[in-house]
Image 1 (cartoon, rainbow, N blue to C red):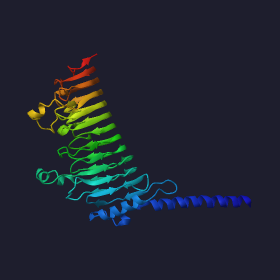
Image 2: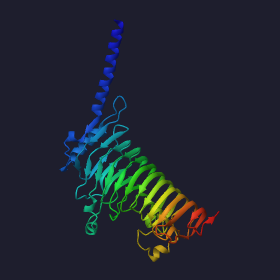
Image 3: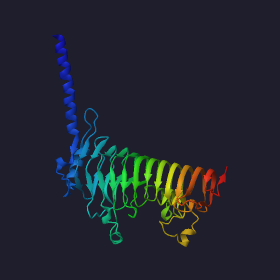
Image 4: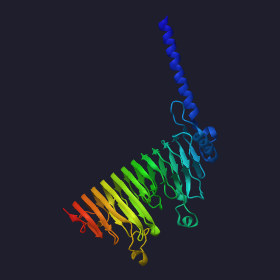
Length: 400
């Protein structure tokens, strides 16, 4: 009898735990449909999403430590420009996107979707974010309207982004600004090769950013690391088409920009305009240092390795800009284990300002032409450092 009573007590105890867990989950999980969202691709769901966000942001972690979660189910949800403002009550919140978020035909802001001061945000799922960028890419439209970035994160620390597909932003697809502690993984970012300025990921004034296991194919930089960035790690990213992975541009309009500890590893560039690129404007100041590109595969890349300190936004620099003696200082740059094919004969370009690029290291570089038998060469100006097992040979670097 006592044994039966004991088993009964244990069963009631376990049932109570399971019941409380279920209640906890129910009170901390929200679905945009429950707030009136309709995923028909035509209804404006902005109000419903803001109401769902308010409930999510005001929710506490449950008694078992579970974070509040917002679910966006299958369907196509049209949204006008929205700002999701923090800070939120819970230290971490989770948004799971399973359907599609669709941009409207007109946006009169610099961004379409903005998260600001939301710490501990997890945004993931199998869904997509469609910026309908083709409506904006026409030259006439671009002259009349400023194009928005699709997704912007401002002062969002401990941010995790994974799994989503980002499509056809009017301008840049994603921006990080003043964000520290960011993990980005398993993303797909796509836009046509001729779509203007559709950068994949733009990073500025941020640190401890890790980007890995992703595919980025756009009309501009796959990833751009701008001023104020440090400890940026990029691993196993497939890039192309696009303009490659760029540090910069830095020093525009004489500004001081500081970038250090940027490390790019195990990446592939397929048909890109550039591969491993550092670009600075004449007349700027600051530094770009402790940067490495290692274990890189090139497939028909036009400028596989390039440092350009006379970058003028794709235009010929003016005589005044060319006469500038000031420049962002480029130093401690390492290229290692880079191999593959170049679309142009100039496989390596180190075009440095009078101040010079210092402590450049190249090792185990093998760049050949996409056209069998065509000669490949390197160009360098005002650069110094060392090279070993490097082809083409770089005349201004000391070989050993």
